[in-house]
Image 1 (tube, one colour):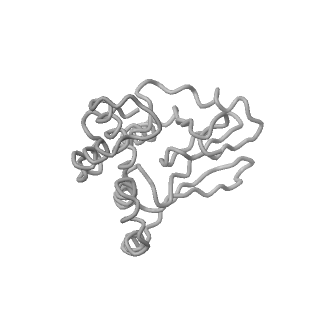
Image 2 (cartoon, rainbow, N blue to C red):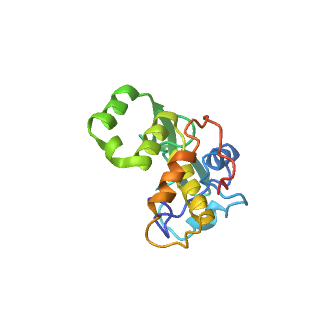
Image 3 (cartoon, one colour):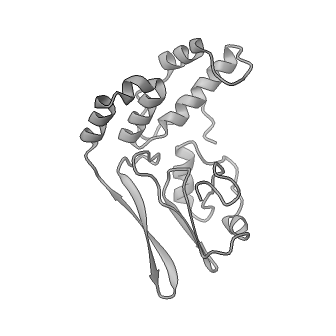
Length: 191
């Protein structure tokens, strides 16, 4: 599944892995409160292994007769590690096991492709956040969108199908584009 068995954009959280939960919180994708037990989410499926994504943070958690794995992301990780992240599944000693891996790739060539293809120039602020996020292994896109919506609300935007151009311009001008690898912008909820 992309997100969870019940919805493609619902996050699953490894409540048995505090290191992964902290990485998810730092990436501004984990809830502030304790997530529901993963075993209860998986009770409704018959498979022994659930592979999921959506959060872009690698993690795994095993339970009695099940294994849940998020492989991370190739090209859009948000856990502070810009390498291409993936997982290998193996059948060992009568059960499935996952091994997370991360491999460096030619970031200069990937960055040049963003420029040479015209995607960076045509994609505006969202393309810029995606490129910087790829380079830094951070959730710049998510942080920017949260900044954008906060500004929109402050500027009196009542919601709707699109954010006005003046709000976009203000968001681009006021967003902290130099965020460090462990920083979450002030005012962002992290959840």
